[in-house]
Length: 74
Image (spheres, rainbow, N blue to C red):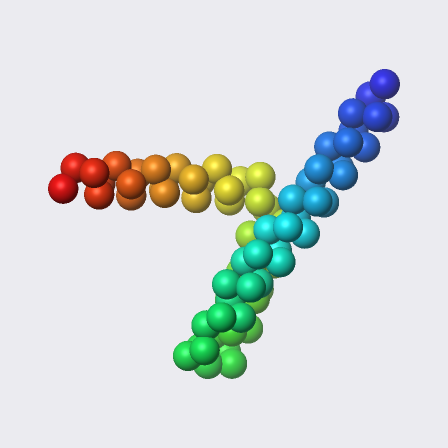
């Protein structure tokens, strides 16, 4: 039973990893004015963020909600 749950969690993690990485890579590739050094650093950050998506996504969502709340208060 636990093997099935664990396998499902790993599969979910890997699917989300690939989806987020390809989406964020698309955003990075649209940037035209980045130096090669900046692109390299951005790619390394992208790899780390994609691997740590269970932490990055909720934090980003909270920041997005906070920014939205600030805009509504104006």
